[in-house]
Amino acid sequence: MTEDRLIELEIKMSYQDDLLQTLNTIIATQQRQIDRLEQAYKSMSERVNSLAVKTSDDAQQTYEIPPHY
Image (cartoon, rainbow, N blue to C red):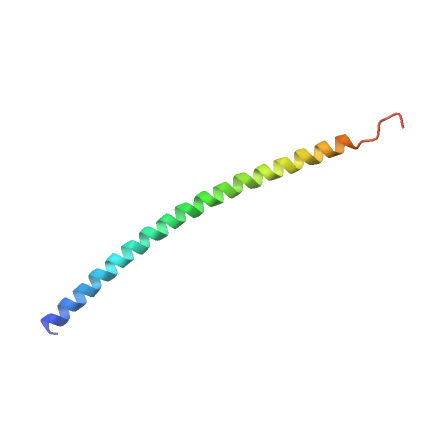
């Protein structure tokens, strides 16, 4: 192997290492964002469910026939 060829391979490896590190950082950032979005979804889902139950209970109480009928 010639010296120039070895230097070329080392340069390519250096660029690949840099690219790998950059991609790793991007993936870690995206995972944190996914985790935050999942938590927000869970919170909103729980809120919607609690409002649906409350609305359902209110609707049943509103439309009950009075006992004197």
